[in-house]
Image (cartoon, rainbow, N blue to C red; front, side, top):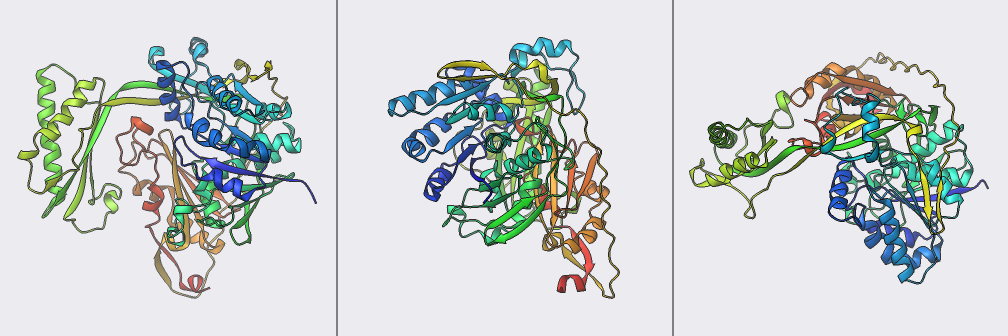
Amino acid sequence: MSKTIKIGGATGFWGETDMAMSQFFSEGDLDYIVFDYLAEITMSILARARANDPTLGYATDFVSAMVKPNLQRIADSGVKLISNAGGVNPEACGQALRDVIDAAGLNLNVTVITGDDLMADLDTLVATGSTEMFSNEDFPALDKIASANAYIGAFPIAAALDAGADIVVTGRCVDSAVTLGACIHEFGWSACDLDKLAAGSAIGHLIECGPQVTGGNFTDWELVADTLHKVGYPIAEVSADGSCDIYKPAGTGGIVNRGTVAEQLLYEIGDPAAYVLPDVICDFTEIQLNEVSENRVQVSGAKGRGVPATYKTSMTWADGWRAGTTFWCVGRRAADKARIFAEEALARTRAKLLAMGAPDFDDVAVDIIGEESFWGAHATASPSREVALKVACRHQDARAVGLLLRELSGVALGAPAGMAFFAGARAKPSPVIRLFSTLVDKTLLNLKLIDQAGQTDFEPPTTPSAISPFTEAPIPAQKALNTELVEVPLEQLAWGRSGDKGDKANIGIIARKPEYLPWIAARLTSDYVGDRFAHFMTSPDIDRYYMPGLPALNFLLHNALGGGGIASLRNDPQAKAYAQVLLDTPIAIPQQLLEA
């Protein structure tokens, strides 16, 4: 039999439950467990932690909740751990791990990878004329930048494993690189094995968000509703050719089927034919998913088109203050009462700001949930007698933000009838952290591997320079059928998953059957999707991509999240609910296809 390895995906964000570890050790035969902790906002939080305490700046949960309680089982099983928990201080994370290992009297080799942190190179980046890679904006003021980290790839991880590491800790690497690094090490893939590198990256992308591929956030949530309390974390059994099976530990909840895997494959991607990673430019358009048995899906067909000469580098920077608070309104014309209450509080606050000579708010959001906040002009619900009101603002001065919070709560006795709120402490202003992404030449980085014996420089492998061309396949034409058309919700014909990248939102729509795709595509044009989300977008800029392998459509909505992350005042600044909005779309389709 050809060699395979088994890799478990334990975390998708900092703060995730530790359920995966007991599941994986009960399963008993994993070769690697990988951990992804770092969203862009997480980097800014870790940067503030390091500023207050030089021994912090990493995902402490990795040490305290994942490694320390399981040290003996890690040592006995021989499983290797790979994690980007190092954040902005990977050396401190490595030392914390060595401390708990030494205290337990065990012998595990911890290797730390450094060199992604570019805070010391900001002047160089400014001098090269670097601008924001999506908006072309100039650099923010250097004194406002909290973190600056390049997304490094998988080859230094593989080198650490080659040198005998039992636990590998990185700073800001690409989420999927923790998985790809294990594959490169085990199978000896080279920098020229582009299809295999793309396949390993796809596998890493599938398991990097933990149970999102095993039933979490699934369109058909009813199938798993009774078992999500014990949802299984994903395992990838990978072959040397890059194909793999995705499954979950025995006896766990959730589900693994073509829908769950396809949804995760499209999660937070842009152009599926040019998914750019530091080690390879991936083409996911022809990926095939095959349900080989219950709760087991085979993945194959990823292609590599080239290797970029640059690293994406993301910076987080401070841009004022924000806050928001929520109220409930009950009774006749509940939404009208909520809107009047919000407008009066804003009017009083603005009058005080004007009297003090202070500028107006940078941004204000008034959202009435239960009316039309997510649906815009496509809202069809009748007026609700119960709504939630959220009022939020952003200002360069925290005192102005605090003033609105005071006006909102301080006039509770003079509000329209039926206002209610959950008792507790008043909301407080918090920093606005923005994302600034740029491209830097790979030669700028000086990557190092650090273990107990010292440090060594990492020499990146020679990579191909040419990028292969790509032509998008045409969407199949609708077949002429002698049957009437009926309208059904898109959700009856497709699965959907949405997510964010900065101020962009993506919505992946996967046809449940290939013959549905032409009818879905006829309705879901870029213009239609733009109209559906017009109330969210600051410009009508939408890309639509076709993926014949699944088959699926992926929509990329630009300038759609009010700045994204915690720079946004939206109820859904990460586009988690956008797919649910689109799945409500009525689709005309031949009755015969539904009956087939």
